[in-house]
Image 1: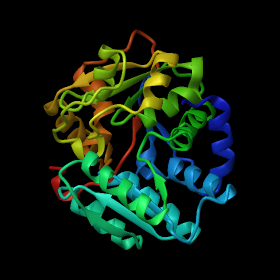
Image 2: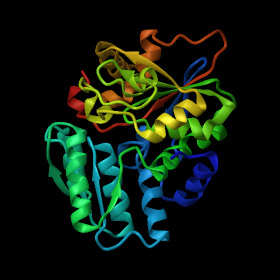
Image 3: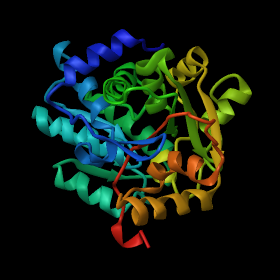
Image 4: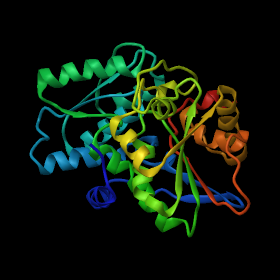
Length: 306
């Protein structure tokens, strides 16, 4: 199970008018930010959610039972938003420790919120039970072809918005975003996943030769806290040669503060992870290299920005 560039192009056409074409800014010579934190609901996730729901609607699979989803927050927000826009109910399962701002936004969007377990995997197990009991449409946070193809529309936008770039740094949780972007960009640039040392799903999979379960934790666990890389993401990582970089907790915290103090971008820790690789020197561009950093989520408590 995988996705290709034609899937991404179809997704772009399908979700046109439903999502924002987010801006890019050159913050220093050779460094460009893609500001996906300005997307509806504060993250890139509506791209995939709309693609999943709209395709299901085309196929007669989106019914009055609506959707169920599990999420650390952002995927649930996207599913709730897309469901509201399409006039169907949403039931979102989140861990009990999900950030309060995300839970409050879910309820504002009209979703039924169920808090269960301490991490994404437990919330997902509860969502599967709800799907089986109600026959609602399951919207996966990262491991469905429609979700990956929707996220890949960011890659198509980059090709249109940035004259030339060599590298894209992308935060990785379950891998739907990095897989989508790599598919959309293709051989036009290399795509590198950046992960917290305490949640290295892609890194573990590449070492093991397959997705494997592992512990997750750390400051970015609310958005990058899946236990294992998605199967689609692994297939794309092998096909496209996606690499993995690991960044320390302190580097993520420092990068988040710098994004606020230097650029006035209020982001969650997961969204600072890609920039942390550049800021900490874990990734060092070659002379003349042009790097795009995906800034992917803004659902955070501004009081914690420091």
